[in-house]
Length: 129
Image (tube, rainbow, N blue to C red; front, side):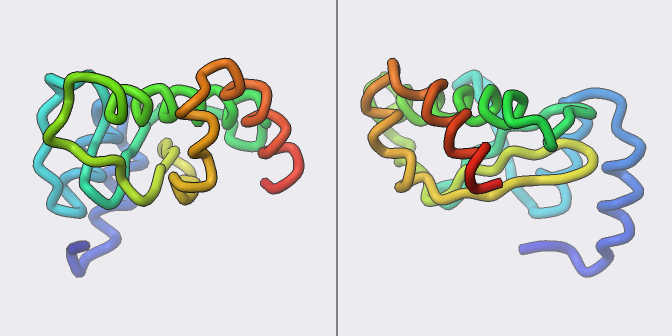
């Protein structure tokens, strides 16, 4: 649950100097406890996050690269050794300035087939974002 004082979030996010600062700000604001042992950013059963610092989200290639990274993590959740974590309902691409939230389900064919991830992500973002 988000804290009541959103200005603290915005002040903290603007002061971030690293991706880890961005991650910590989101985690603190939403009360998410995290463990980096699984080598991905924040995870909840609802949302898997990938954080960046000062990326140009207007660039289709930037968004596609971050989405491909998230889909790789989803693929690891599905086929890897992390059996206690289910595939979350949403994926969130975020940096200091903006965030994109997308349903995980619409990308199912791509985390099932790694060869299609990059090409389709570029086409999808070009058409829909």
